[in-house]
Image 1 (cartoon, rainbow, N blue to C red):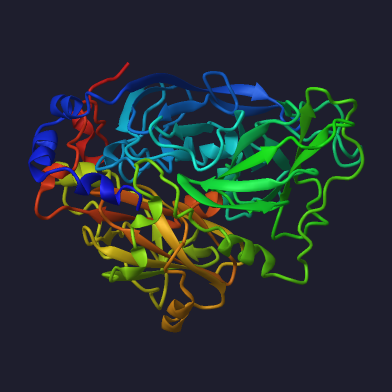
Image 2 (cartoon, rainbow, N blue to C red; image 1 turned 60 degrees about the vertical axis):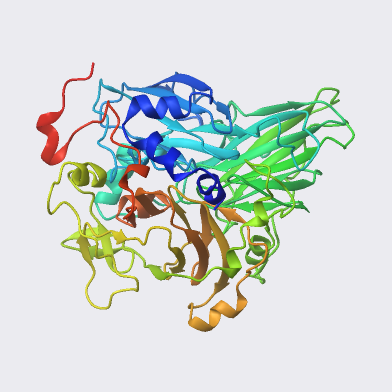
Length: 568
């Protein structure tokens, strides 16, 4: 949504000039915007975050990977070298890739990078600010690492809607198994559940030994160093497989300020639920005495929490003048065993900051989404995994997605027929589920209403590449037309990943102005791997030159594999 105004103010003549030819003219059009160049080497390293040696995917020998930090409208050039023993793709979670799905890094739009090869991603963080992350998108690799944070800063002419913090602190939390991604995906292919995770990592490290029974001795843990009286911006990302986590810092308030590129109304919380794939910014003031260190906790939610006690991540907040170690029990998680609406109401309370500027001088709330007529409605239903053709699969609207041999945009460009179908149903299908390469034929510049209906037994998160969307409604039960009466049409937050409670629904509005082929998926890695995804294909019928052409280094596969030249 935030990018809605960016292109509307540029004349059609300039757009035609800017996108008429490929790389050269594109660079000329954005010559005033700086470039940031990085090199990422993806490889394996033996680490023991939970005390068991295992093969972890590292980026530049780091776990988590290095921070990517740029400013609004910067052009990023990231050369990814694949030193794994299998194909690799890197997705830039939440970066909208305006008019450029060629760089999105998912299997339906890009050919994978073979072992020993490299690929250079080139994209602009156009009209964006906020907290995001990158991760491998295929072969279940995110379960073994390969993730890292992304920060997109405001331009200096755009003021922050709060006093500038004294520092940024990135925290990556997520459930973790001591079996690597190959063993985990083998379990899925053998029609097994993954079972309870072995723990929760904070910044790639195991828990501080707050409990000698639950936590073995000798684990490395994260220690966050702070100064008393200062305020820090904690950017927290749940990069796990499938476990929702409650985040809290002992005796400290979490002032919510931003989520996935949009400033929120500033509200204090003592604990906050962060679901798989989500990112939040909190302002935290170091206003406690320094008699001891303090616990930072990420604990499992929406499970039998007494059985899952060992699935708890614990780090340490250390004041520079601290006088002792943290001791005693962890701060309490939410006490909502008998009140299942607590987390739902917390999610509903996250609203946009209508007076704050984001990537541009105009307030983010100036796009009056509640006054725009909806052009298309999609009800996307998820169900528990089932058996299709003898395989365990997961579905959306009764279809388990099969990735095309030739990525969608490549097939369009080179006129490969029969690669995919634009027949994804707008409502759940009745009858037997099927495996298919079925995508949505989107209405360019349409204003779509998408309802994610979770008829599965687990909490799920859903993500849409290439867009941010307004979260207008959320509840338990089955969505009906009457549910629109509960929609928030005034100050709903915009973001790119949203939770959907088991047995519940979440409704979003999204302005479909970004040409390309964009992935819609569950963030729960097991369900995603089993087929719970699709794509939305958008074509500008009036001017196809507004979408970026194929990059010079485009990779070929599938029906076009014969066109690929060796890339050392």
